[in-house]
Amino acid sequence: MFTLAKTEINADKLKQRLQQDQCGGFCSFEGWVRNHNDNKAVDYLAYSAYEELAITQGNAIVKHSLETYDIKAAACVHRIGTLQIGDMAVWVGVSAAHRNDAFLACRYIIDTLKADVPIWKKEFYSDKQVPNWLANPENLHQ
Amino acid sequence: MNCQILYFATLQTEADKTQENFSIIENSAQTCADVYQTLKKRYQFSLSTEQLRVAKNHSFCEWHDEISAGDTIAFIPPVSGG
Image (cartoon, rainbow over all chains, first blue to last red; front, side):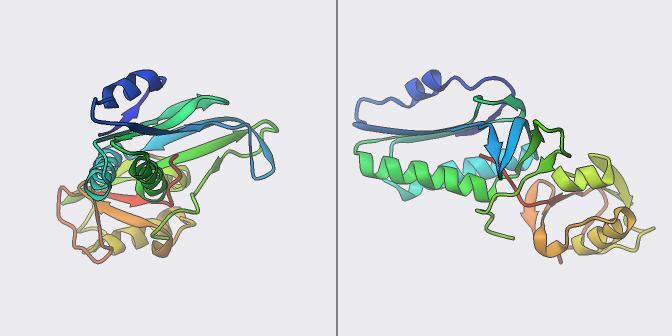
């Protein structure tokens, strides 16, 4: 399942929910806020979302991963609001009997989220330049 | 006969608002594209329909889809999640 979170993501709790006895492999991805982008020093980020559509699209992506790959469970959580350097912005977790499809599904979920889910990131810079709304190169439709 | 317009990211900054009501009749709008063209002129939006997606009632739709009173229309700038 896909959810939006207004507070800190608890990765350990999310991972525990995906653990199953028949799974021998678990793969997760964490996206963290870094301190630079495009040769600029970043102070912090603000994420916003079209919440109704983001949840629909995010759930569709997770559902598609379960239908496409040989995995047992998958989940994704994305933060919205103001995030500081080092904060976790997104978490993806996949459990499977074997590692190959766990890796593939995890990659699929984050790549497709970055292309398709209506969430936006605004960067605020250390030198106080005008904050910038970003666009992912992964966008499939532009 | 109004529909509700939702703005996000760059368009939210350029319109200086998150949402507004839009009169279908006053603006002679029949499709999502008609709505956007009217608002693009009004707010001097920097993005064209080629750079955006559009959603109606919280689902992606096509620019040529017709609009009805009570619809919620959202213009989706290039996304940047993750």
